[in-house]
Length: 511
Ligand code: B12
Ligand code: SF4
Image 1 (cartoon, rainbow, N blue to C red):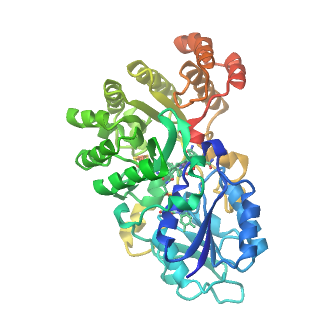
Image 2: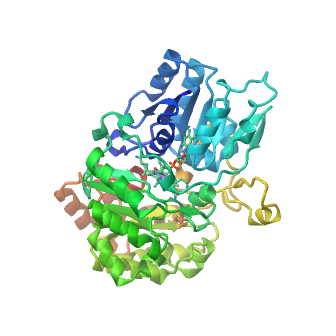
Image 3: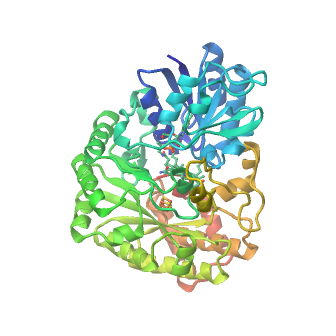
């Protein structure tokens, strides 16, 4: 039996903290097999010092960190350095989206010994079986024997990155129940949202079968998905409701509604659970649902669907390989309105190959969506290219290991950072968080920012449960004329008002 410390470095304020699903999923498979503890920087202050104290006090066989691109990379570096300083022998493995997408960059850090690419349950178990209990040093001719056989793992041998074969991932039903009891006071994770007082989160399916060009999910899951059985979801929902105490749930699947036939039993399972819920969906899938399916959604208490609307023109959607059409976005908005569901629509603006007119078309389209469903939430993102596998290389040698690759950020953009430290530079955080891109002109940046300010004030998000009614009314009134006339430029009065009445940003903080 090994001893493992799993760490979720701080990535949001305690107020926005949600059940740390990545670590719960890993903990579930360690339960009864290995000794382990979860340390969550979102709710525990001084995460690096605590991690260091833990490995100093008791010998650990492995420390695992979950790392998302963007603001979580900095705290992950801090935790890893502190652990390394406290016990130079304990191996450190990084998993999650950051190291899965930028594997070699993570491996270039002296404090990262292993990277788990993609879903990590089996990879973690296999790594623990293969570890001799200490990290590979320069004196070793390479990594410990047996490591080469751990599918889904990357590491360095004599300074050269080695990428083991990819690991196929199984259906969610195959995994044991989540060990919520390991998190201590669960009240810290069940925060109020517009759906209820105690918001739970859950991942039902794994992966997504689409291959949109900007999406990190494609990098990790390569266009594959494994939905859960309805009974599995029902059991998980009942546990969240009765054991954890959630009164509503956000399903953070990449794309909850895979097909209509597959979705219906899952929706019925959620209806049995009876908690109001939120999920990701595609416009084409929702627009194609039968009226009976929409009635089932209504019965099941679906409150909000996050739809990647992305763009207004068929050409832009095609360039992104989205696979949806603009009319489906409008149809989905209308259907949502008819059935009491709020669509949260995200748009990806300013692609490197988009003509300038594309932006104006999309802004106009956003207003069309708002006319159809005034309560629709709108999230404006800047286009983010992500590493992708080269289909020709995969076809040529299907049995080889094909890591997603990306050397530059955009056609003429800068080379990608080579270390986690470089990924922490403010411009890279902005790129990864979809707030900026190197190819944007100042005019485009300003236009996006001004429109977002006017829109956000004209329609303050329903997800901001702390925003007082007077604050909401003030922002709406102040921005009314700008929104109606299309004069978005330099909305200084709105910026000032927003400083006095800060609005929640669901895209960065969650519900
Ligand atoms: C919930 C979520 C958030 C929440 C976090 C909630 C919270 N407070 O904890 C919030 C809203 C804050 C958030 C914000 C951001 N997010 Co986010 N988020 C997600 C989401 C929807 C779910 C993540 C999750 O919990 N999955 C369920 C768990 C079980 O899966 P997992 O984390 O992948 O873990 C598995 C493996 O990765 C692996 N693994 C993970 N960690 C480890 C560690 C070890 C040691 C090992 C061995 C294995 C391992 O094993 C796990 C079990 O199989 C994903 C999309 C998705 N469905 O995955 C996007 C996603 C991860 N986010 C993404 C991004 C970009 C961001 C942002 C940077 C920007 C943004 N606004 O979108 C911000 C910045 C966050 C920050 N401050 O650092 C991207 C990442 C890819 C990319 N494009 O770069 C995703 C994929 C969304 C997308 N489609 O693009 N996010
Ligand atoms: S954008 Fe949505 S539909 Fe497209 S690959 Fe990503 S998760 Fe799947």
